[in-house]
Image 1 (cartoon, rainbow over the protein chains, first blue to last red):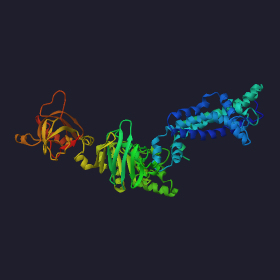
Image 2 (image 1 turned 45 degrees about the vertical axis):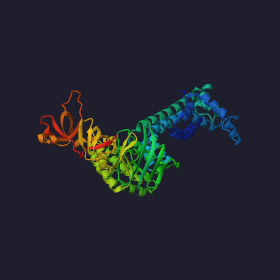
Image 3 (image 1 turned 90 degrees about the horizontal axis):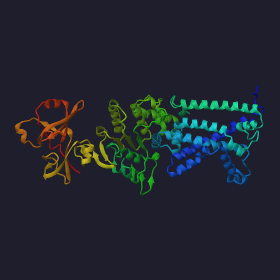
Image 4 (image 1 turned 180 degrees about the vertical axis):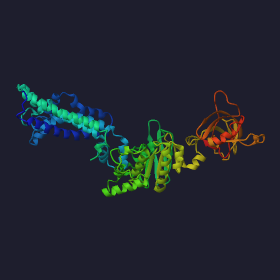
Length: 232
Length: 359
């Protein structure tokens, strides 16, 4: 029997805490960016789109290195944080930053597509009925775009959970603090601890299956029932 | 309450350039597809921004380029019935109608929503979702929703075009009832001449972004102010015309002289007559001298269930080209009476039915 339960469960806790926090940040930021994008036009938008999608096309190590330059001792944000008496590099917040940045494009793309699909006449109807732009967004656009946004959230969560390269660059491998499951697997393999590596792999597999299952459920169930997304 | 409009907006195909003032009588906005009708409504409702001009509703200025006023759509208090109703699919009927009442306490919202639904004969639909409703029910709900904000003007964009013929007449009656109690400016966009006539008291005829006619519907149909207005209100027969004397014109395309009842307007360039005003008279030697009576030959015909359209050529038998001078529309009963008579038949273009048109 090569399987044994991991003796140290902290990578699971860190991974879940990181992914949940990063996904929450991405959800808000991605929705805000997509909503903002929808109200703008022109050539500048193509540039902004490009910047938003960079983390998707860049190798995670490059993203991690750029973040390190940004948050490092001599980076603009690093200096700012240092003047406030803190630093994020090689700490738990770094795992969140890395995961959020890398999963942001998933959320942005899904939210953008979902919001674009909403019939603009419904938004206009809302306006003629006296609703503010904010109310038009949360009471009409968001509930109708919800299935797509939710699918984006699940994809972002999965991406955050699997994040390795950027996390290692920015947060390192500090057991109990920044060592997420992917990092634990890498260092277990490097230390020839195959049993631990396989154990974490199976746990990751289980989580992924659950995520894919819920993604399937949400994308296929959205056509059923009177738009369950609209019910609060 | 008056709705004053004077706006210009450049569109890809033409410039929308419209000025008129609507009072509390419903206005049928008539014009072919793409004449700018919907754009006009959207500009007034604040969903599009005109390049230039002024919009005022009951003393409130909603838009004024010179004074840099642009009231957002949400503050214009204009009820809009969209072409396909635009009901919120994720909200129940009651929630749809209550959407514009969010400033009221919950209990009152529900009470108002039911009252509105009752007013548009849509009671009992409260808990349903829009996709569970028929086209007619959707329209009643959309109307209740548009009225929920107690709008100071009501705009309807092709309200009946999505309905089948049977529902159409029902909904027309419903709209007439609503207009009768509403008594504030109403603009009803349609490309259906009869619908515009039945539902509007006044007509605004739009053509490529411009006002071809505006006024009481009876006047526009009896005496269209322009060739374009005549054509857009369904007149089929025109001829270039040259004045001969005080009440005689020469119809150049019809090769005949016509006596007209109307005093000759100075710039009259065309004479026209509506298809159903063309009269067929019995052949008899004596009537040959009758005024405005001419021999004609049938070129071809086309039938609808109750009426027939006859394409006629004046003075000479038809040629192979199928050219015709006049389109006449008669009821089948009447058609049965003279269809077997030998050609030529004799048409009478009554002076009272002829109208003179400036270009």
